[in-house]
Length: 418
Image 1 (cartoon, rainbow, N blue to C red):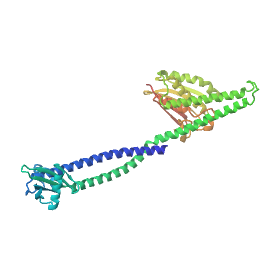
Image 2: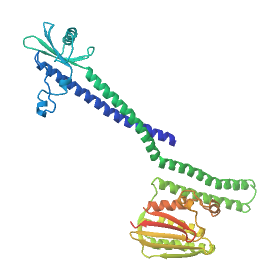
Image 3: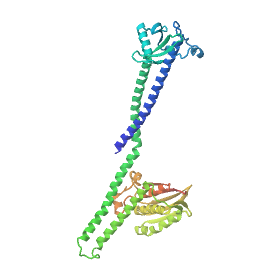
Image 4: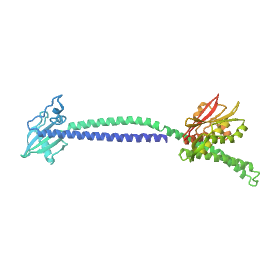
């Protein structure tokens, strides 16, 4: 899929660039063709304005601009032009301007074709001439002819140049598009891999409780005559697995809504100091049973705008994680809530073995476990820290983790007050 998307991105980019370049070059060729035609017409008018024996003007190199323009377009004067005078359908004189070799037969043929065209100006394609015809009051006809080969040669050279530039530009843009596609699709590729891993992990986590439920119900159905009391053990296991599966599905729905920005929030003024203190109370007996010393330092009266339910869940996730993994020689968990400029800083620290550095960047990924076996044994699915990160980002905050052998592991959450 990513490969097809990459090539589609490159193709669309090349089509757009090619279309823009084609339009630009077509406009360039059209404007130059028009300019060359105008120069040819100007040369024809200059030829008609000259007498039969008059030569075209000579231009002085380095002359002032007003002298250069005295005779009109200087480029037009360089175009090969000749004129003929026709009386009673016969060419009576030819003015070659002193620098055009034209035979009487060619001049006569050109004059005849120009008169047969029944229009004052036009192009004689077979002879490669542009003509302009003027009828004098005495009945004579003067026709000026300009060679088209220079126009065609100029346009051909310009076309080949544009074609070469187009091909080189498309080749260059192909490699640029290839680089940009790799750069732009890198987050998409990462998200795609994470989605595939997420689906695989979710399927695996759901498969385990479903297998247990099916096994337990199979045992119960195998003894239809037994009482509910005699089968209570298997029913209890089934209920416990169903409860854990329900919690997993709820966590998955929470993350899915967070991803699609459809996570419902009820922002209000929340006293975070009281909220954290209230979350600590249920964990005191849990910590006592686990032999973990629970300490806290909470500045009073610290408030912010946020969703109280989500913030409570964030604090509970961090506390549960800290109590679970607090380790010897003196297991302890320390919670602190302080003000840091315009933000509130919540830290949850626990002693114990440090988290290996290679695991730290992945701790907030879904279903990721630094110690998979221990986390499964303690009933975790690897979604808690992912949910904590999602809640923090929903409140425009930032969550981070540090872990060293000397100081243990510390999770830090910075939340803006508004």
